[in-house]
Image (cartoon, rainbow, N blue to C red):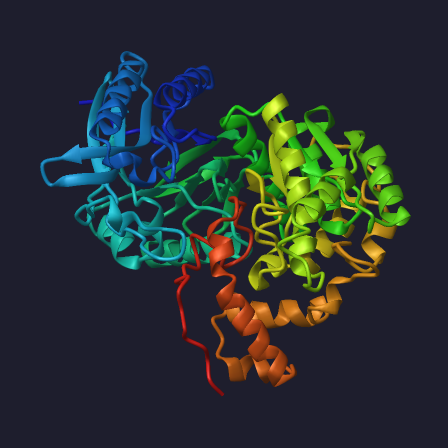
Amino acid sequence: MTAPLTTLRILSAQLNPIVGDIKGNLAKAVTTVEAALGQGADLVVFPELFMIGYPPEDLVLKAAAVADCQRAVAALAAKTAGTGLSVIMGTPWQTPEGLHNGVAVLAEGQVQALRFKHELPNYAVFDEKRVFQPGPLPEPVVIGGVRIGLPICEDMWFGRVCAALAQHGAELLIVPNGSPYRRPVSEERLVSARARVRETRLPLLYVNQVGGQDELCFDGGSFALDGDGKCVQTLVNFAESASLSVWHKQGQTWVCTQAERVDQITGLAADYAAMVLSLRDYVNKNGFPGVLLGLSGGIDSALSAAVAADALGADRVRCVMMPSRYTSQGSLDDAADNARRLNIAYDVISIEPAVTAFDQMLQGPFAGTQTGIAEENIQSRSRAVLLMALSNKFGSMVLTTGNKSEMAVGYATLYGDMCGGYNALKDLYKMEVYALARWRNANLCHIGLGASGEVIPPRIIDKAPSAELRENQTDQDSLPPYPALDDMLHGFVEEEAEIEDVIARGHDPAIVRRIQNLLYVAEYKRRQAPPGVKIGTRNFGRDRRYPITNKYRDEL
């Protein structure tokens, strides 16, 4: 019998899969395994459900897709024959008991062990109980004579899974993850990981997926803790990384003696990187040549253009200024300056001929009525028709530019400024848009491809926001000041606060009631909005699912 290993060289494969691209994900895994062999690794760890991509949602209910994953896992296992290398691969797995979120341990050319996720998350953006069956409390697997516990993602957040592994003799905990980004999550992961280390006295390696998937961004940020909870390895966040850590057994304890430590970004830098990575992957994974957006000279479109240039490079971004009779010369100048600073393609196409035509067409039905929102929305919808025509002709995806504050209260036009394929600002309140614009002017995104310096003209940041759909219009004509609006919305949306608690923040009761009502009645618009990356704690869509028909209102 071969003696158990006393040194473990573990490659943490923080990679970016594509959901449903089983052949592509297998090819990426094979390349990583070959690189691991070149580095003398004993073990390669892939993220949760890597073979199909996370989250697969109802794709795993397609039996053929699960069978293809199991065949791909077998093909990868064959690559380990005669190498001495073991692989931990996340994959869906069908058993007579049901479909599981599992990991397969591959070695000596075969699938040597399987473990299934015990704690299935079913809250916020997660609904794994919809598609998977929970596995039993797991026992360790044996790799090179070493007993290794494999809690899968959510299993790490509950003490009983890791406790059971420790009770059955685990020497080391390795956690494959598909954990998406939101502002406080990196700190929460460390707190949970350290709690498990403290309870079990076992070292822990956390290997997370990276990349954008629809409305989620996986930030990577993989790490390792020694048996005292000290961080001994950190991988870059928001980028792929395959990083080797070396562990030696000293007595009964595994000690990390060599590993990479990278400073991980946080705060506004992390928010911005999440937006960049998510847009990049949405465009590239879906095969679009680039993006197209309306550049109005306002803060939202300016930040959207900056994110697009950082995500795709300036040569894949096209902006169009679409002035009407109400567009100020200042907006024309600011939009042109914005495009020049970003080095992006820029066109000016007036919507006046289209608006005039609609005015003439509707002259009879609108006779005797006051000019108002209907006429204003014609302008917005004319711009949407123009952008979609350019998109259809040249293939670029239309990027919408509305923020969370506007979408919360319905300050957006269906089939107008809401028209498009993706929205990088969807989960940013208005004041967060301003903060990120200032941040981007002072910093470069570490994964960005755009220009340096003040890419957003300061005048755009400083001026009062306006849709410019009528003379001398500003957003504050119909909305409270954005700092107050955002505070109310944060209470209602992020915290599910009661109306009296929002009023207690210092807001006028009548305005709070109005904002609450606007929030509820705009649900039908949000259901028709394009996807956009989750940044905060509670985004519209996956996190917050309110009925469209809803008569409930909080009462004082």
